[in-house]
Length: 370
Image (tube, rainbow, N blue to C red; front, top):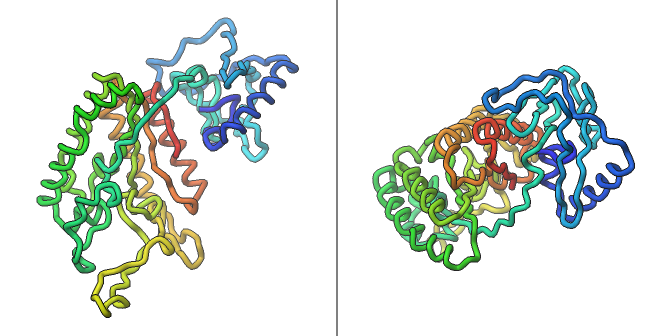
């Protein structure tokens, strides 16, 4: 959401010091300028059942606590565009906005207004990450990958994708179920609760758990049953849970944590003497093909994979359908660590589309960008 009509992506990427400086500036301007009214023209509602009734009197101005500051949020004049704080963001006068439970969304420039929910959020989150459970990463769970030592280029797994490809759906699922059963247990959550140090859990999940594809089909069967159980445990012990969609189809960053390592080259032919090793090169030549085909020579995307982007939105839809009503869920991180060369306009649009999906079905969830 926005604060003082700052776009979603801008506010999230601000450092804490920059946010504080902005808040001080907004406080000073709010105290020296008269507030305007907060009324827009008639808007389209996407959630009529929960949309607040029309107000006959002006509601009190919301406040936002920023460290020691209490910021008064001035209202926006009738029929005036949201003040984005940036001349680069254009406003379409025909965009009358869409009403959600806690805010009004303007898709023409990816901003929100009338936000009465997110501003008071001052809860301290003391979290721990349950990595290596639903999404395999060899450095976290090397024991699952020792079995591939000594293999050749067709029999070596280095990520979740190749783990399922090499082992196949039956053996892969057998090993994964054994891993899911033992890696995160109720005893672990009980110990975390007793420690008093943790009140929230971040759980990396795979997009393939909700919309299976490729070698994941069959290999990851049953994963959601274990996630269901974890959420129930978390609720019983008083933990909130952030669901982090850690993987994307064709990889959002090229690393194994995306599910599939992308942009590597086998170099075994250069390592035959004297020890006949199976080797490869990866980090210096990695790529990410989630949103399109990347050309490393041009350092640019030559084609865009709109089907992949839609797949990712479908994953968010499936996740919401299953967990929107679960009391333990704090929110969702729709994509983990997209790399720095991701087409920015497409990434912003993906975030915006996913954000509106989340806020329509689960208006109290937090929407995290990482």
